Length: 314
Image 1 (cartoon, rainbow, N blue to C red):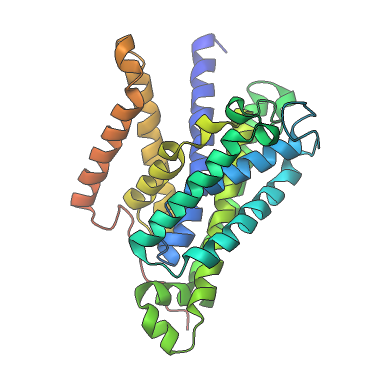
Image 2 (cartoon, one colour):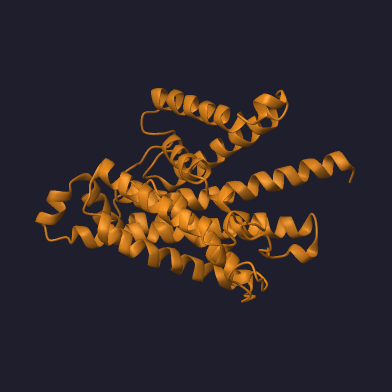
């Protein structure tokens, strides 16, 4: 295989791997927003908890940060999800009685507290330098086989999550969440514990977001403050879900594919700009994604694949 074809293959593998990771994050957000109507603007915080937990558990011993446990990466994934869920539970208990914009402000504030603690506590995660020794499954096989197997692993996780989310959507639990989302007072009037169901959706969604953070840390073999910026881990995920169609797991995956492809393609273009413009490229790309969102919502007010009622299975 010549160098140009090999480069294209590795770029395609990278693109597909990041689609898988963002697909995981979109499904987590869809559980919170599409199922239960919970406006979580703090995705970055739960992403960071999962990523840092995985890095600490799997990285070799270092004097610069907490670590040295040397866990196999695959075993660290469920623990990273557990840590994200343990953080989400008290956050949910405090915040879920709030509605709409107030919930968004509370979650983004708590998310920033989590990110800043991880960024500034050097003993815990090496501060702004981050952890750069995160092991990745199959990396010992080298390129391209290790990358291809890790891609297959990420897509396998995504398929399992998609199947689980579809079953949850059609289950009585999913129907109760949609009832609470659409009319909270009516759901409470027929005896449903609104706070409990909303808390369940919030915690489960946060655990999936932690899983996305863990996979991202493994893929880049690094986690630091720059990898948990809200632009990449909150704004993009929300745009993906809105463009694809909230309340529809297929829409969440479609939105992840479309937005990540555009985000990556525009990076190739902005890298050709003059040097003084390259430093502003992320803002130009965010502007382009915002324009895309406006165009899509003008044509598809509920997303490209909007929510559809489940089939009657009586």
